[in-house]
Length: 335
Image (tube, rainbow, N blue to C red):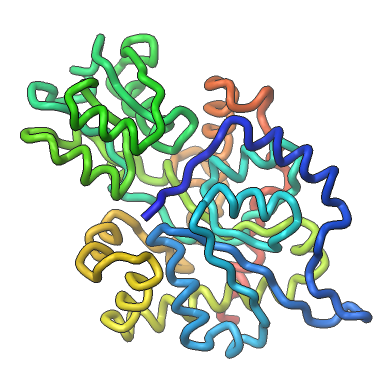
């Protein structure tokens, strides 16, 4: 599975692309503004594979919405497709949504798909038993990724900062390989690259996303204009999500087979990755959308991640948050 990442140049690229694609291939609009086909994108992450179940089981149609579901082998391509108007909606991280918004994209989060609760890890070689032990050590991580964010959160909790370690910026696959080869003392990685890193005898995760609840949320994100113009379709998609979760709960073996096949992994492999992902129910969605001052509140996380993007030089200034979070559809789901 290829995990989602945030790229520094993405925001600028999206801003330029928005100008070039103002008249790009748009949603299949009817003449009188009736129902439309929703172009929905997703990529390889356990929290997003339920969309494949929804399509296979006819749950979009059951909710009266026509969906063109597109699977992206490259997660970054899905981000670009949404930001350039070639998708109406996409499943992506809060980090990446804020990066796109910084580049001029107008996007709205309408649903929490999941939180990473263990699939993102900081793994250290033998002899390093805690994050505090990373002082002065070489740590490889892909800059700008959610694992970079996790590393900084863990360092801060241990009373350290990025200045207290020797950061080795590498792509995640290369970072895991460098750790396995003994070239660095620790690595920040996501599944399945965690499996690579843990191949070093005696290595172990000294902290994971499970230690920072709410820090790495994944969402269903729409173009803001689509939400304004087609609220019925947005509602139908959100309703479908919760219907899909109910179907999965009632048909777990069949659902896992569908999702594992889409991910190109065995059922056993899928279940191991899935264990580090918490799919959000409607009740968990409502709690996350509620404004607050804890990591469990999306508005708090959005502000925290916005600062992270600026402090790491991924964006020049904090993205505007007005209109970013819309809980209307989650509140109305099932009514």
